[in-house]
Image (cartoon, rainbow, N blue to C red; front, side, top):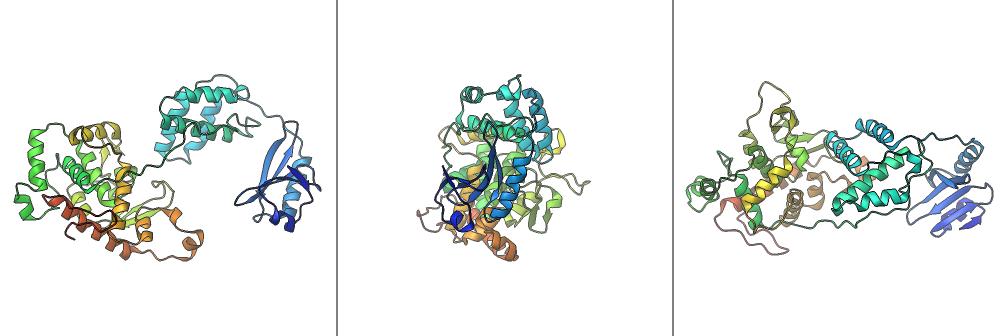
Amino acid sequence: MSTILFNDTTIRSLKAGVYYDTTLKGLGLRVGKTRRSFFFQCGKERLRTPIGVFGAITLAEARTEGYRLKGQTERKIASMPFPEARTAFLAAKKKRMRPRSHQEITRTLTRHFTWTKMLDSITHNDVSVAIEAIEKPSEANHAFKDIRTMFNWCVPRFLKHSPCTGLKMPYKSKARSRVLSDDELKLIWRACSQNSAVEGNSCSADSMRDPTSVSALGQREKAEDRRTLPTNYGTIVKLLMLSGQRRGEIAALRTSFIDADVVTFPETLTKNAYEHFFPLPNLAIEILQTVEVDTTKNDALFFPARGKPDKCFNGWSKAMTALRKALGEDFPHFTIHDLRRTYRTNLGRLKVLPHIGERLLNHVSDRSEVEMIYDRYLYLEEMREAVQKYDTWLRALICTSSVPTVANHGEPQANL
């Protein structure tokens, strides 16, 4: 920690660390790898109040704000019991969160954090003990993230500082890298076809008559194995294999989202809160044409929940258990989201340009802020060409009796 005279030239030349201004006591600057942030520190607790990032605001503006904070009389923060604060936090977030996200954060905060004492009496140790009591690493990480978010919201409403400050994520999360093989994709498609009255015309007439074709095998397996999947789930999984979208987006698909061969997800549905459009491959269109929808509605769900026509399918856990049983104990473990990663990987194998693949998956982070502002071209035809190339490859894969072989870095060996 150093105390120096702040000026623009000095600030730009500072190395990583924390510095304080000699002109205004309490005005500080935290220099990191990518930015320099002003803050004001005062009081017996030496609490830091963020002011802004150098570059976004000037030094003069930072000092002006610092003088305002210095002259501000410290108000007494009224604390409250944890259950009341939790209720207030969840109510405030309900309007901004998607229903599923709000439901999940409500579950974790209610299940794992049962304190009844005042907020300002909750300590670092209280949080650590609650987190350590959670057995599953992924659940512990999610619970810690949610309680940290809540306490950050409580500052400065009901707390001077968060008891999560200084605590680290309990487990290091490792990004999944599972990509399903062609054999596995074919077996999953077969398992999801057990309840299908039609294959969606995905195979030619010759292959349909072939006793070794996917349809013939599927019919035989259907007769031999009574462990069936929910019909909606099998169709959803097929569409995930064909489109690479997120499961919640496909499950919430409505007739109003589709115009010709283009699907548009509203910003209220997507994870990144950006409207997302993409063309459907022909096989996906054929499958959707076999789904019975409520024709009396202009905005009907393709996959409503059982007994709840106004809500989309949500029985993921039980359906996944049924799918794993249908695939057999020897089938390697996978998650539904692995289908999305597999789709994107196979687009690369098919020589689809990276930026087109990322657009199809609605990966906005792949695009720079400048690109999003100035490049207003939709790339619809390029995306349509990519999905039809994938459609042709997947049809060849699921309709052949032998599984295509693929080189590690080469193109798929199915008949394209």
